Amino acid sequence: MLSKNQLGFLYMFMSVCAFSIMDLIVKWSDSYPLGQVLFFRGFFGLVFYFFIIPRDRLKNFYYTKRAGLHFLRCLFGLIALISIFIALRNLPLATVVSISFAAPIFTTIFSIFFLSEKVGLYRWLAVIVGFIGIVVISEPGFSSLNIYFIYPIIFCLGLSYVAIAIRQLSTTEPIWLIALNFSAVITIASFFTIPFGWIMPDIKDLILLSFIGIFGGVANLWLSQSYKFSEVSLVTPLKYLALVFAIIFGYLIWNEVPSIKTLLGALLVIISSIIIFRREVALKKQVSVPRHE
Image (cartoon, rainbow, N blue to C red):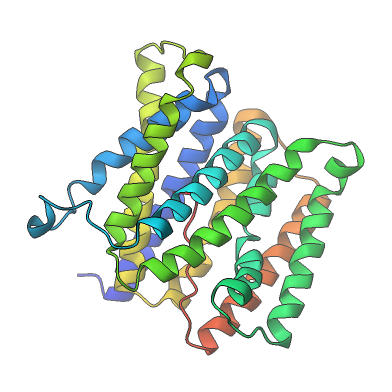
């Protein structure tokens, strides 16, 4: 019988694996229109949340008094999701994952404006270190005017506001409703891209595209379960396994070999996010930053 902390580790590990596989399939799906991929992410991710709605909320599961904040969470989440999908299709896997770790840096800055939090010297130093890491990773892209390097940064900005919005919403709203609304918005938004041309997938591709939503859905559920069973400070460092998976998958499938600059920048970004994480744990704040799902 596993202890609560062991269960937390297991759920976090499975969540990281599921997110990594989802990223892998998104990168593979570049022959399909982006809007069509969004549909599979939203629709098949939506299915899971109906299984965890409490019975007493089945008739009014959609009810909320904070529709405006839900809308903003979904809007910025959608921007983040589109940005990370574009980045995954056009940049090396390890590069995208490395820059995505910078989300806590922007969350720290946003918390000043949206939550009126005071940020001390250590976290400001961490922010600076993180930005240096981003510049080190992106420098080849900026110097050659590769516009795609901006998308993982947009993802971090969008995700950071999402983290703030979820922190505000979770004081009154159930997590399943926050996630369900986001999946519903993704699905609805994808329908507006149909006129731009969707492609009829064959059976194999249909299954793979469906897995984008399935893995995205279960990854979020497992992430929530991980934080439920174990302390955030114990399981959060496991998320950096995503970079290891990205390097392995990128090399084996696309023959991508991360440069020394990418690895050095990733190390700086990871150090930065760990400093922010440890300081917020010391201050007893909720530090979990959800991914783009």
